[in-house]
Length: 268
Image 1 (cartoon, helix red, strand yellow):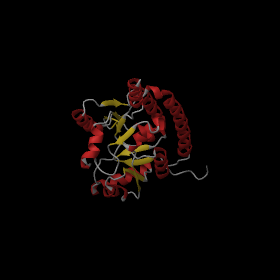
Image 2 (cartoon, rainbow, N blue to C red; image 1 turned 90 degrees about the horizontal axis):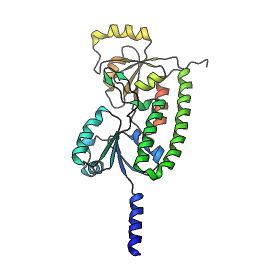
Image 3 (cartoon, rainbow, N blue to C red; image 1 turned 180 degrees about the horizontal axis):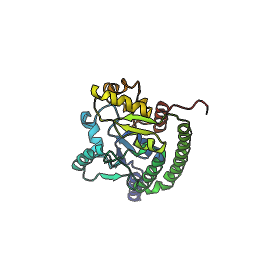
Image 4 (cartoon, rainbow, N blue to C red; image 1 turned 30 degrees about the horizontal axis):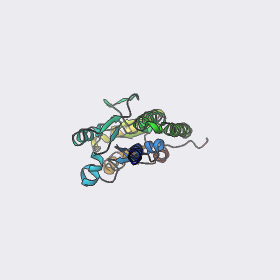
């Protein structure tokens, strides 16, 4: 009898053991938590505070010996995949962006799909299926949370659409393609500049181009060179907008971006 009780307790312990999941950025952790709540230990590689290389061994070992790494096909994830395979051959590596159509931007596949609420719909569907496969006995719970999340995304998409429909400002300079999908969805034109300082001999053509397209904003990744952006913005009297697409609190972060890059028509 005692033997059977021990076996039963062991089985229950196994079923309720938390699987440890690794993600690249904080925003990816948030999407998982929306569906699975606290069912998984979720570890973030790049949290914006310290690079992975500078982390202590305790943190690194927690990452190395996790069960699953959920990726989005990002270029910066390739080095981690290679490293994790060497450290832990049992780690499952799953690309949760598979099946989602992506655009080619400046000759490369753009994987930063989570700035577009409608593409996030597809992403969280993949996450729901993946999490359900990891803990099949919680599928109904995840399904219920997934449905709630889809409704939230639809409402958020429409609220953003209303804001951008009032927008009278459609053209922005950028160095990097992080904001491609939200720009495409809400009809914002991104004009790409080389990721370097603006030379003086370029200024006349720059001024002419900015005036022609009514460009008054330079959008840059938070933490990148403000001085570089200033070498562009100062010549055309443009505002510099800093934003990080990887941050936690995805909805608030996207709303903040919308406020910073939009200029609303006063008569609407």
